[in-house]
Image 1 (cartoon, helix red, strand yellow):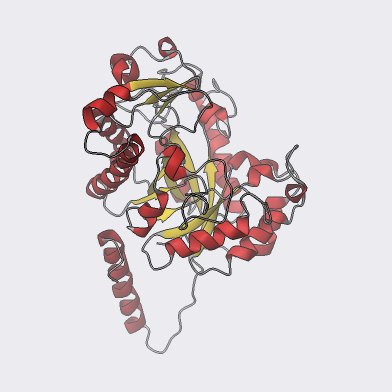
Image 2 (cartoon, helix red, strand yellow):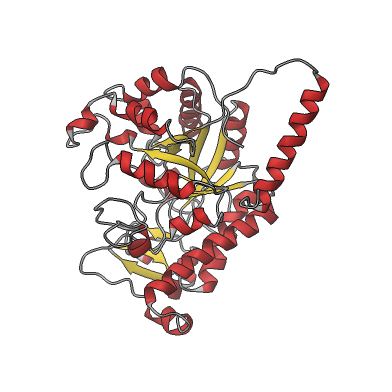
Length: 409
């Protein structure tokens, strides 16, 4: 078990002890086995994507919509909800660090009159669901006007922390004080509530925008002297965020897992022979400065959910090719591999014909089942589970989720 992290080793040891005690207590009796796999759904709050359906609903209306999403997850025999609780340097809980999210009331900083995250944790657990708290570390706003932020917003008190880019505002990952602040802001939620995991999505440095430069010259001049290139320095900044988050998380609430859902292509093989046989226009290592392969191989995170948002047979990024690549990356590590599934594409206008077939998503699960490294799937996103225009989610449930399953521990 040398490859396991200290946390994973402790968990495995406790599981072994518990199993031994159970077996000793019931000699000669074979206990029924419960399937263990991730069956998750993302519940996005940014721009009111999934929930609340619009800003300004009453507290009772917001709560009712949230409960409906949780109940639907149970009916689909899912076991995990990944709730976005910090979409744009704001909060869905009473944070002492950042303002209430505008996606609740329509006005950033306005108290919604209830505690969404606290309620979500309590109600999810009451239904046998895990609740993973989903944070976006560095996105400040989906606009470029600092005066639209709440007057108390840290980005207004520290304008030197902020970089405008592509019509949006971002915290600068190259400043150690920024990294320390966002870590404190996120961990406040973990200290307050028994969330089952901390979850990051695919946004680290922002996705490239043609003709624009992310202006981190000052930070690079101050802190980048030990690196051969700005790209290497940027990757180190993100590596530090991941490692520091994992270490402090273990101190704040031991046993809470840490997972990341990156864009599905680390590097194309044409760029790096260790990469996947793909021709993706974005590579996380080179464009987002996120060395996702290293995080898995070095056991810095408990689980990874690459966003494999392409159909089987897609020329530039074949789902089947990427499942094989990620399974090989995860092989022999202590990092659990789950796959991010593009439910939102099923039946959507403008998508290739493969996505008009309600069986496409079910085929993904059938293919992935050939790989023992794949321990489950997470579906994007909750609104699409509800709408299910061509019955793709219903087909997944009928073909693969006939019985309940517990999340991997």
